[in-house]
Amino acid sequence: MSKEKISFIYATYILSTPEKVFEAITRPDISRRYWGHENVSDWKPGSSWEHVRANDERTVELVGKVVESTPPTRLVITWANASQASDPDSYSRVTFEIVEYDNMVRLTVTHEELEAGSGMATGVTKGWPAVLSSLKSYLETGSGIDVFAKPKSA
Image 1 (cartoon, rainbow, N blue to C red):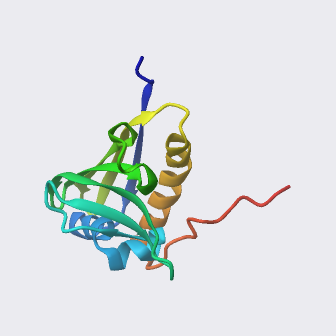
Image 2 (cartoon, one colour):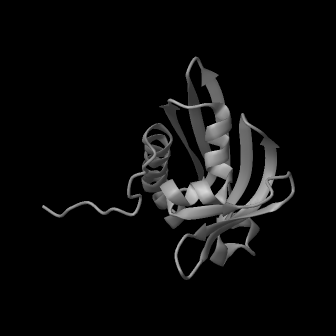
């Protein structure tokens, strides 16, 4: 019996250009500034990509393949914890769609094929809103937010 799969869709509007948003997702030197990780690849379909923690340990936390890359409007990748890279069932899929609206863009991130109730699904529901908020802040103000911040206890 196959496990239930779920999807999440997040959209945000950013005062920026499609080119800058696409670069922010795909350039390691930029992604580390708002995500705390570097997204490393040549971004060609079929190529591998890695999500590398931007610290002294340089831990590879996520891995996948580039499914589609159409700069600056669309990027599709597979996504799995590095520790589960050898398990084909552990992979989910992320699509970044970038649409221009006058002087801004709508970035829609669709994360699908997630196993319901999994640690990855839980992490995605908490992670994407913080990452996309940080990306928006970074592109609009030059400073990202702390995506690793924890809620203060009452």
